[in-house]
Length: 481
Image (cartoon, rainbow, N blue to C red; front, side, top):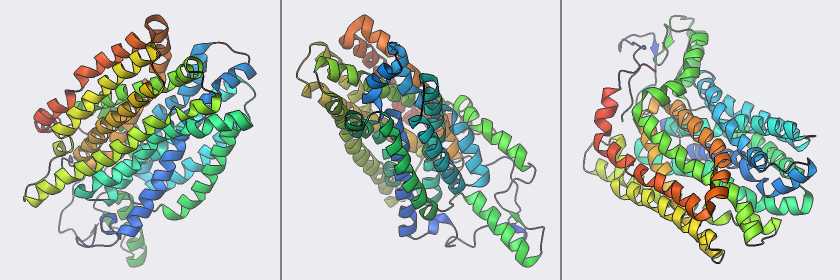
């Protein structure tokens, strides 16, 4: 479904040395695994993708305490301490995606989990601001792996008509983690101090890592066929056997180099990915900018305590959950309806006009709502409802677009998600730094209104892709990835 064929792998179909799946019902093929096994992998992956984004914002309510302990009054530095974690998300995918396409998804998850624990402990033991920022960056670098490779794991196991629901569940982590993290973080900081935020993250990561070691199995088809080929070579003594998905003209080191740059090639050489990734990046950046203001808005303006400030993140998470359930279910329904009619689905079916226009409209409306209700100091429930609406709209945009791009380039799903994550993380790390100055100069009303005005024209991007997407994808199918 929209997947570009490799231009370098040539297989003669009747070649007896070519190793592939034993027919369409081969149980070694992850697409044919029992539902219980598939969903065990999705569950473990979802837990990982909830935990690692927790580190991006869980200690946000404790930033004032950190600034006092390290004797700093720089507001931009206070924001950067939070957003530097997201900067780690920008660079981690450049290693995680190619590594998963060479060595497999499962081993990458396990190694990244261990690294995440080590860096979390180091962050908890930080002696100065530089050490804290450095290890926060490395936490994000390691924590980006399940976010980068998760969509690839899902697409390995699920056919197109079931993929939306599975990706919706997996996508909870990257979006819910930053929302629910401060809820617990506020009380942890208030009761135990900011360092315990990282100790608790490390303990939770340790427990999850053990569970994932047993639950997560390899799903990447080229790696599984390579292992099958190695096994058959050993059993039969026929060293001429090769995987049907193996490019024998490229060595493993060469393939790693190609895979390292593939996310950037995907981002800059495939316009559907470039345009949609920019939209996702802006929406994600606005989310992190809003999170950076919550401590000031609800702590200083509405006089919430450190613990209560953490609760202000709940409405965004609630909006995300509702949006996730609604959009994940609806996208699969549209695909199943088309299949029932005997029609072949296309990736553009993942960005139906009704869903994308609704989500795209809700985002700027919620920005105006949040901005002017805080500017005029309306009752605190008003801006919180606005953030819930933003969460719903954000999930609609990100869910539809991400599944659309995965369906368009199934073979390179990990690289596509890596490309999206790189741009989204860069904007998410930098926009809050500029945003605080924007609010200082214009106030919350006009500051958020400007962001809302920027989001309005972007709402038509999915509409354009719905109309011209097939032609654009066809035009750039020649791009060698």
